[in-house]
Length: 189
Length: 189
DNA sequence: CCTTTCCTTTGACGAAAGTCACAAAATCAA
DNA sequence: TTGATTTTGTGACTTTCGTCAAAGGAAAGG
Image (tube, rainbow over all chains, first blue to last red; front, side, top):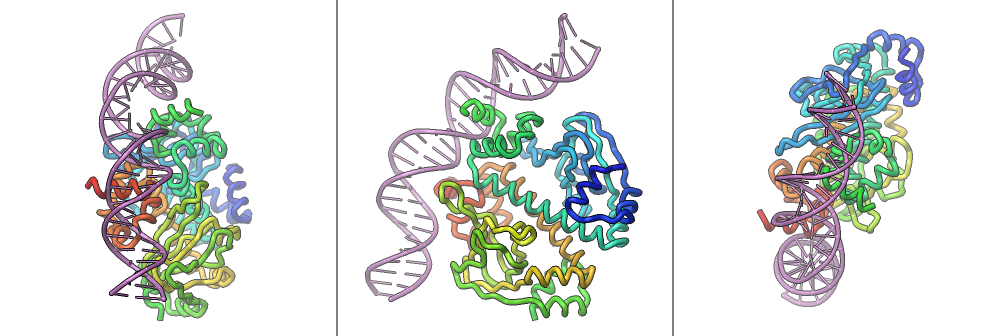
């Protein structure tokens, strides 16, 4: 069971059957309907999540009341709601299903136990965080390095699934521009 | 010796004398003159660095040949050159001293030994990465959430040391705008 | 099938950004 | 101190962006 998650782990770090069995035994499943929230602003994130199926977005509201989308998740992605869980503080972000989705999750308390049980998880956790840090750095560099038009072209070239599967009104704020500007950029090219 | 680094560790995770002594014994020191490079684009980052004294910046060159600054480091900061070191690939970034600086560093090979020697380092590494991921997320949200003017005001309010100690031409690209625009924003307010 | 809702596009307009060229100010080094 | 270099500010101009309002299209639900 949960083979996609096991495969995702294997790509990062070889896992023994024993370690996997411990892990699997504490995994829980949650199903989300389209537009349903996994987490709302102000709530404390209770664990780490793996998107088993579907599409999910993460967003917050700016001073003008507009939604700013910060991440889109697809099948086999780890959700990156680190701050709320790690520091046990209310989340600034909303996590919402764009399509009907299924997530696997590990409760925070159980994760702590896991970290104590085997060095494997400590190491895996570190390695996953290395990947997250790298991808977050790439995203911020992307925002400062390219112009709005170049950002769109970059996504078109490198992450076409965003354009195919994410509503453009969501994608716009992820690119750091308005909905209307994105529409005009698309028209120009 | 190296007390600031020990204090920085202590703030994250309690460290035993034994663990600290092991760590201290493999620490190395490097002094940089103003404008000297710690790492140049194309080189592979050989370890993790802690800025003991001075000011350092990280930047890369965009398609137009312009410098894009991605990070500024002050006393007691960890340098975030994760990708090159972790994946053993040439760095996209240049790391350069803005002022005469002193860095402490741990060679990558020795770090691996350290990870094996004590669970402490594995855990510390993970916790440092958690902090890095969170701060990178905040930076990219900052870029997409605020307008150029708001970004400048935010920095003025929350990170005044950047404005006091970093040349504005460097700060501009960090804020995702041109040097001239930053100058005009400053004039307007 | 039709209606409603949601998403995307467009027009008009003003504000702000980028660019190039150059001037002024500050800093550095001889 | 003084000349050279670096950094910051301005002017003129073009391009693009954001905003508000409204119109088309597409998708969803009864």
